[in-house]
View 1 (cartoon, rainbow, N blue to C red):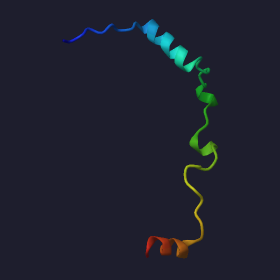
View 2: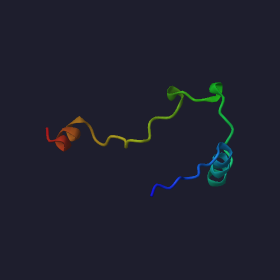
View 3: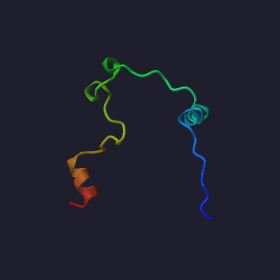
View 4: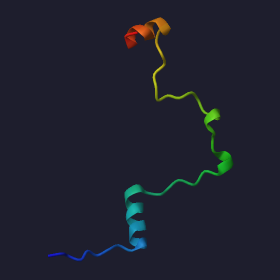
Length: 61
């Protein structure tokens, strides 16, 4: 009952990637990359609201 599957070649996989994702952008040269210190402040967390007394109340302390 085991069926033998036909596998794609590397060229066929490359074509399928191109069809799905399109043309890749040019590579960024290492000297053009920004380091963490050169970027803006982190945006993945909201700014803290209030001060330490408010934080203690929220934390139950």
